[in-house]
Length: 204
Image 1: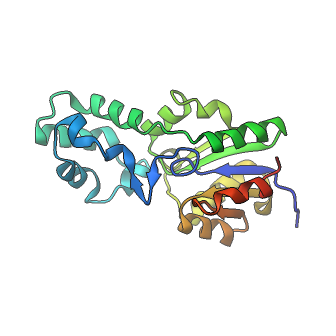
Image 2: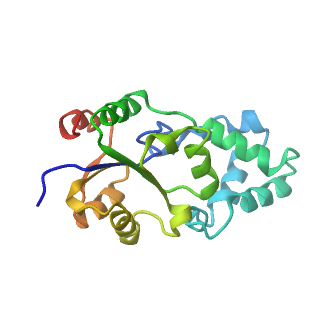
């Protein structure tokens, strides 16, 4: 078994992007003031029937937002709401992006492994610039499967062509970390208490 970390795999939301606080997506905090429509009704349209079909790429997020916009009379339409959604979610964590910079200096391969549908994934890659910061950008919407499914992690391992134990994974979801560990990856459950441990673990 190799002790070398050849790949650092980052979750995005809640790790590289500080947009999750106590399990809450904070971009929605000002929704009613900014948009002028009920947050409760929006949540019911978007999330009550489950978000997995969207995250796995089997349903277009734009279509679901359009149905909400039509139902409540949101005149600006789905495109405007998605722009608002994505822009409000731009909260990169300077301490984490700083670690990414230091790993780059040591020529450590980095990848992003995220549950995101294709539209926001493209925004993260291009408008936020994270596509240029990593060797691979793995997202559930393109892969057709979401974390914590083992198939997600097996797909990533196969694409990277490295041994599972050579991947070090950082995620704020305990369930995702558990699956990764079960498949032989090394991993850290990222919390406010554990984040300081990265300095000692990463090949900086």
